Length: 218
Image (cartoon, rainbow, N blue to C red; front, side):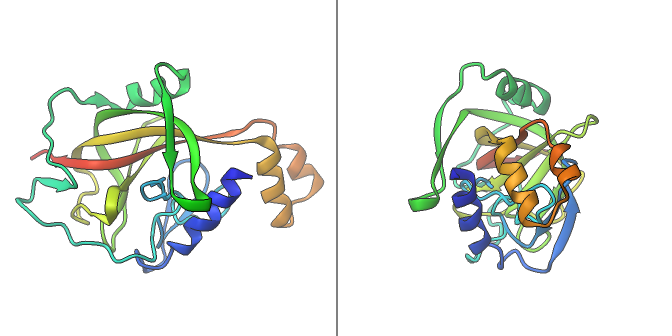
C-alpha cells in the first residue's frame, strides 16, 4: 500500500522531463523517461511505477522545473564532491541485498513518503541511460541486468550527453521492494490472466539512489 501511494505521487511528477523517452532499464520494465528521489526515484525519492508499468522512473520526470547544469562542467548537484573513496556499483548493490549496516531512510514527502532501508555512500560507474531532457535522472547497469537508478536531489541535473561517461555520485542508496501481493494487484489491474498472475512468485527488488553531488570524471 505504501508503494502504491508512493507511485501515485510520482505520476504527478511525470511531465517535465518530457518527451516520452522510453528506455529499458534492464529490469524488464519499459520506463517512460518523461518522469522521475526515489528516485528516486521520490526524486529525492521520485522513482517510477513498475513491472510493465510505464514508469516515470519511480517518479522521475517531474512536473517540476529542472535546473540546467551549472558550474565548472565537472561538479553537479547540491554539493561538490571528488572521486576519493567511491565504491563500485556492484559493492553498493551487494550491501543493499545483504541488508548490511543499513538505516531507515524516508523517501518522498507528505502522504506519499515511505520508509526504506539504505545508507549514505559514494559510488562510481558508467552511465547506461539518462534523462535526455534535463539530466535529472540516470542509471548505472551491470552485465547481469542489475540497475542502480539515480534521482538528482532538488531537481538538479547533469549534462544530458553523459551516457557512456563515468560519474562518481554521493548520496543515499536504498532498496525498494514490491511484494508478491502488490505485484499481482498491479498486474490484475492491467488485465493479466490467472496464468500470468500465478507466474509471479518472487518480490521485485529495485536499487535506487538519491544523488546529492556528482563528479564527472574526464
